[in-house]
Figure 1: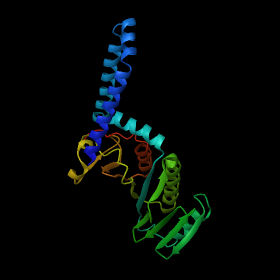
Figure 2 (figure 1 turned 60 degrees about the vertical axis):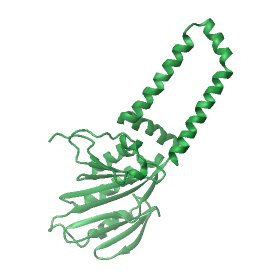
Figure 3 (figure 1 turned 120 degrees about the vertical axis):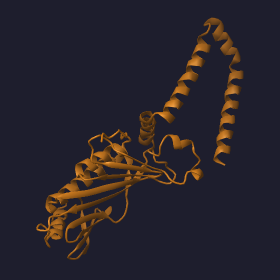
Amino acid sequence: MKIFWIIIAHVAVIAFLLWGGVSLNDVILHSQSRYPGVVSVFSVAFAVYTTALNFLYHRNLAFHLFVNRIRLRLARTHTYWQPHVAMTLDSGSVRATLLDEIWQMLADGKHGVPQRREMTPTTLSVALDELFVIRFRLDEQRLYMDFEQKLIVPSHLYDHFRKRLASLADNVARLAKPNAVQCGLVVSFDERDKNPYYGLFVNRVQPEMLQNFQVTFRLDANSSCRVEAGKNHVNIESQNLPDLFEALRTVVSLKALPVERNT
């Protein structure tokens, strides 16, 4: 059905151009008599130009993302974020007061208006500004920091949310003093919005024919971040909090390009 409507649209555009050409025939002939070859050269140049743009959009990843970046700014769309962090602690540094210290840090209000939802010896659940709920869970060797629901982030607030999450995770890490970190963030899209990292060659494949799609790449040869792109999401995994949020900045701004990693 989708292909049918695409064909109908192309036929309608061709018919409109034909009608316009017939209507402007006398004007074109008059212009050609005064400026020989100008109209013909311009028409050929315009055709080559549009063909080249179409080729670049479908074959060049950088240009493809550039066009989508402009569309993203004009459309003011939103995405959904779901961060998760696991901090490995030294067995000697695990303390029963860690969750209390985290709550006291949040209670200062630097990260938003806090509301404590749940507090047990191993679990702390806090809502910030009634926008999102963070659950901290402590076991024998790890501190887990998860968000109960996906964050709905408008495109014009991408940088604001990114900095806010980075500051929060950094302050928690300062209290926990982990010796290792496993962190990640999933950026997902509405069903009607195709992931810009979906891939160029699969754009020409009908959705019902493509059962699964996933590509994994790194943003930099020395980056600790691993990016997985699927049909409607981008998953960023890292072992370093600053790297994670820097990678998030490039992904949501559609500036992240895969590079080969020397092994």
